[in-house]
Amino acid sequence: MPKVNILNIKGENVGELELNETIFATKVSEHAVYEVIKNQLANKRQGTQSAKTRAEVRGGGRKPFRQKGTGRARQGSIRAPHYTGGGVVFAPKPRDYSYRLAKKLRRKALYSVLTSKLNDNELIVVDSLALENAKTKEAKAALVALNADRKAYVVTAEKDELVYRSFRNIEGVEVAEARLINVYDLVRHDKLVITKDAIAKLQEVFI
Image (cartoon, rainbow, N blue to C red):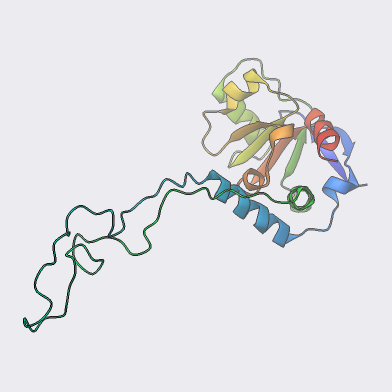
């Protein structure tokens, strides 16, 4: 089983933790990660884009000039797509971009990213994130001590309002509950700062 050091918020080593092989020692699948991130981004799209076709643009009901005898190409409407102010060919319309992926694929991607975080020394396990006050200054000092002061993904076992209020104003830092972590957020942050209780929660929820 893979092992990792447990640190306190001062960056001091206070113990060691065994990690579950299923989550933290799996075969990394870059393709699974790609598919899940693509799915997450597609599901986030609003899909509210819209443009008018030639049938929807106002005007153009009258034939602009007679069919024959002018020497010009025949035209039926000044709202045809090749005219300025005309309709759009294959105009985009509001649509739903979301789609579902298999649960096994989503789990495989999550395991792959967590394994990569461990292999790349981007996983930082702390005994607790309990700060004396909900102060951004204290939270930032803790991240500096943990060598995670840039783009950190802070994960707690349960919703912790004190931790959230402490870290929310730090640029590049995001706070989440263990059961709500996702592949996209893990990939776009440089460090994963997670409590040992959150590790246990991960193993409980995602296995």
